[in-house]
Length: 141
Image 1 (cartoon, rainbow, N blue to C red):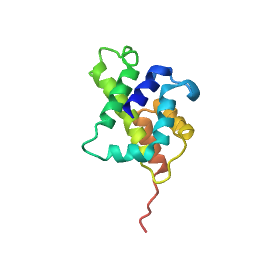
Image 2: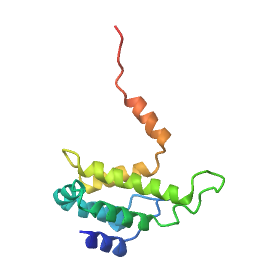
Image 3: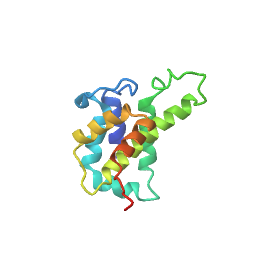
Image 4: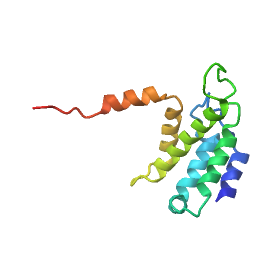
């Protein structure tokens, strides 16, 4: 499985996560999502198997795909180093992939890619505001 994933990242365009656009048919992340979706039962089994290093290897492929260009524009006055910024980006992608694949009803790769695109533009503050806006209101009666 890792060889197929590696092939995808070598064969298809690696998106610039700082300027990502919705062009899934030519994008390595979309193709990876298609592949993982087609093999989701095996992927889920391997994710949950402590002896498997599939998830770590996919993590490493995503890290290479993100490369340094996504972190080159970081203001050096920030206390966040480029290495930390890259790992935050990679972990965000990995969390999104795992969450998507392990849902009881898994949406299509196209739908998941749209969520992926949207997640690229949301900050933690944006996410917190979304949570607050959608939080059920409890009444004290």
